[in-house]
Structures are given as C-alpha cells and as structure tokens.
Length: 519
Picture (cartoon, rainbow, N blue to C red):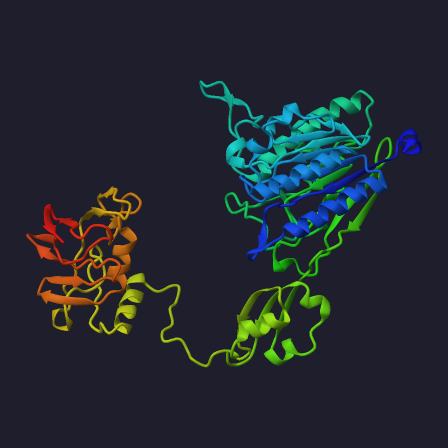
C-alpha cells in the first residue's frame, strides 16, 4: 500500500443498484444480498481498494424493511473500516431519510442526497469524485435553474421539464468547479456519479420507469460538454453511472461511461447478463485502467420453454438450482402441470402454459381502431343479445332502455347521487354524475368509496329489463344490487328506486332529478 500511495496509483470500486429489500416474484433475495456483501468486503480488503462508489438505489423503496436496513448497516460498518465509501440516492431511495444524518458521518462515509451538493467534489482515491443523486425534474427544475431571473419573485425561470435539462444544469455546476481547479493546476482525474438513463443503454424489466414527457433518457455527449457548448481540455475521466441493472459500457461520448449494474438479477429479462463490479485504476492525472470483475452468483436465473416431456427429461443440475421461469408449450394444458414442474425445478417462480399452436378460434368480432366508439358499443350490445341497440343523437348517451319492444328509447342521465354507509360506517355520499355540455355522455365525479365503480360495473355488465315505455332497470352483482329505474320523467331523465343495498347499509337513498327515493 505504501508503494501504491507513493506512485499515485489508486483503485476505485464502482457498484450500484443494490436494491436491498427487493424480491423476485415473491422469493426473498436476502441470502443473495448477504453473499454479495461478504464477497465485496473480501474483495475490497484483498485488492486494497481506496474508495467504493455506490451510484444510487441502495434500497428498493423509500421505507425499506428492517432486515434491509440491518444488512446495509453491516455493509457500511465493515467497508468504512477499510476504505472510503461514497453513496448517492437513486429514484428508489427515500432521499430525505437516506441523507438524514449525512452531516454527522465519519470522514470515511459520504452520503449525498441533496441536489444542492452537486458541484462540490469529494476527494477520495486520488480523484475528484462528483456525487450526483437522482434528479426528479419536477422537484429540482427550479432549484438547479441557472436561467435568467424573471418576474417579481426575483427567481430564475424554471428549467424545462426534462431529464436532459436538469442533468445539463447539474453538470454545468461540475464544469464550473472543474474549470476553476484546472486553471489552478489541479489535474487530478475527475469522476461523476449520475443516476440516470443514458441514451444508447440497454434496459431490463426490473428498472422503474422514469419517463418525463415520454422521454426517460439523457444524451451521452452531455458528459463531454458538461452542459456547455464545448468540452473542457481536461473534463471528466470516468462516469460511474447507476440506474440500469445490466452491466454495460455506453458509446456516444469520449469519456468512458459505464453502468456497473445490479449485483443480483431482479427480473428474468436479465438472464444471460453476468453481474459484475468495476475497478477503476487512476494515476495522478487520469484513469489508466478499467477492470470488470464478475460477481459470484448464489442462485442464477434461467428461462426455459418446451413441452412437459422435454422439460422433465434429464434437466441440467445448475438449472434446477436456479430461479426459473418456465413456459410449457403442449397443445393441451398438462395434468398437474405446476406440481410436476416444481418437483424437478424446486425454484420455479413462474410456470405458464402457452400452446405452440395458435388457437383456431377466430375472434367473434373485429374492432378497427378507426371505428366510431358508438358503433363499437352497438356491436357489443348486439353480441349480448340486444339486437336493436341504436345510435342516438350526438348529445345523448348511446344505448337502449327497455325490452326489445321498446327500442329507441335512450336517456342521458343528467345527475345521480347515491347515499349510504361504507363497511367502516363512515358516511359516504356525493354527486356521482355531472352533466357535460361538450360530451355526449355525462362524466362521473365523486370522492373515494362512493360506489362509482360499482355502479359503472353494474350498468355496463348487468342485464337491462324494461318496465315501461320510458323506463328501465339495472340489476347489479350480489355485493351491491342497485335496482335503479331510470327514464324520461318530467321532461328530463329521472330515477326510480329498487331494492339494492350497499354493504353495511340496507337502506341507501338514491337521489335523481331533484327527488329522493328509498332504494
């Protein structure tokens, strides 16, 4: 170690996306996380690593389970005894909780979750390390803005609502600090730790979608220009990226950009991807080597497809010990399919049947995307045995009330309010229908648990029986049977009560057309 320090050669370990507390299709991954942490600590000690960079998502959710907290505490305690650790918050982490005691930590542990800290480097491993927590555009577009001041509030205009805009602003802070240091003669290698989706990277199913305005990514060349117009003569030397779970290098920039990836596979889409950490060797002025070190896997993942006979005949020992997703392709679903599969593959987490031959049953009806919605509704109703469903005027809801002999009588419900008790005995009432002057159908409004979805389901799927030339009745499901009569009453739609009930209240009240009727 003395020789390494004397020559200026340093070793920095890059990892990310531990996602402690995560499961794989319900299976606990705690043992796999423990095995990775033990291996990592041994590697850091064996190789004499000078700094460990963890680029976000150390936990899988903002409020991690107790066992995940204990696991992380143990890892940080043992790592900080032998090296310096720098970690940032990702889009899964609760930044405020993770960074609560950041200012009280020992010099060997740095937790950076505050976007305002971007641009201030941590000097570790002979390099200038610029931590960059995950930047949610809606939360930081004002605080990171470097646009001109506007309005009476004397605040800069907010940045555009995009990942590209907020990361560019953050990198301009890094650029300003680097420019000042380079002018002062500080040529130490510079490393950025962003948590973002860089264009050109390959995603997997286990990453959370971070799209804003339909665009989840940022361009790779941002790390060359650092948000400016031209690159610096000596800018960044390495980008230790986090967020994507598949280890990979990103092209499109002159500076090396690498995702270390997650240490454990969190979805079957990661099958075939070797998990790894990255060791970055630096000298006094630059990165001299980038080494990828594979992570030993406690339990692998595999995706299998075939007939039952093929899957059960002479299985591979390594596969039977792995977490497996299996698709059975027999023409008919095999008897006792799942138990027989799990007798051979005890860690089969997904077992589905998908015949290799496509079904010969043609769909009953073809729906074209360009068809009028009312036409599609009529076709659906005819398929339900309501052969005389007719289209009505542009300002009337499509559909028919009454029996076959009462065709053509359609109504537009101007408003409907149902009042009752929820199972928790809290009063629930409100206006569920609200008239619309610009749409053919009324909209449904109201607070939570007032029965909107139940009424919609009942009216959509229940049979309609006629009671008169201008009336009808909807019969709902057993859990809630809203026998709601409706029709043209007094020049406008009205409602008659039936014998339905809400759970917890056998006597709800139905209001319609300004009247109240016992239901």
